[in-house]
Length: 323
Image 1 (cartoon, helix red, strand yellow):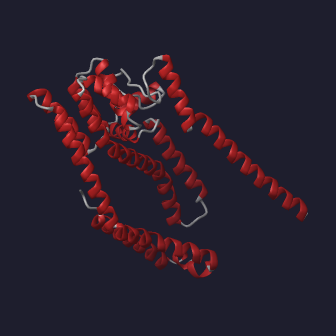
Image 2 (cartoon, rainbow, N blue to C red):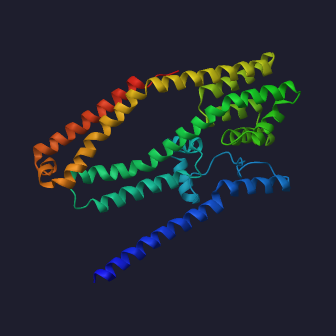
Image 3 (tube, one colour):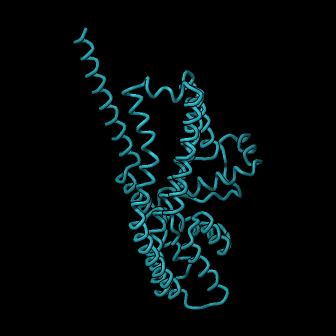
């Protein structure tokens, strides 16, 4: 019996390893860096526009769901537009219905799995499972905006050099979309394609600033709009903006280094109580179970969670320095 069990465990381990390796190979072949480079070269050879297949819809409204009836219903709910704008800024290929479906599925699965747990955990787990897709979207949005912000100084210098070389601003947008790295290139490529579809340049630049809510990019857009109305040396202005953005990013990096201790303290103080509870549950369940079996213990747990959240938010406010 032991031999059969151990053989089954070894075969199961090997199957999991092979499945993971197969999924990784499939993902690399379909969506890896090499596959993206091959698609880029094929599109350049065929004369198509560069990029990862990004395109601008000529429809006035984005679709919130693949189903026409559900899409119509979602368009009638005003807060849904904010969700769609968040998805656009995150760069994910999801629609609103996909996001809401993931939230609902996660909440239902967590509610079923926590059916035999105490009441407080049964309420907390579905809420966390429902919030997980939102947190993922927010994290993707934060990472994408951070990459775009790091690429902005080079983009401003690139535009300034192209304007000094005699290119028109519309051609410069196309050049940025073709030559700069992603994800900034996709946004400038979308602005150029909007102009090609007949959208006025002012409106296309405003749409660019709405898709990328960064103060530095808004400075760049405002400089272009003011120059179009009043004139001036746009290349010199953009070069100065690029220098200012680069210096601000250096200062921001210094601030992050100086505030690293506070951020680490916030992480430790926020995670340590939950780690201690998990460790005590694994080593001495009878001792720690008073916290969710006794009414006084349940009240202490809620008070403790509330104070932890308050402390983490306060530390975050202290260490968050706007540059």
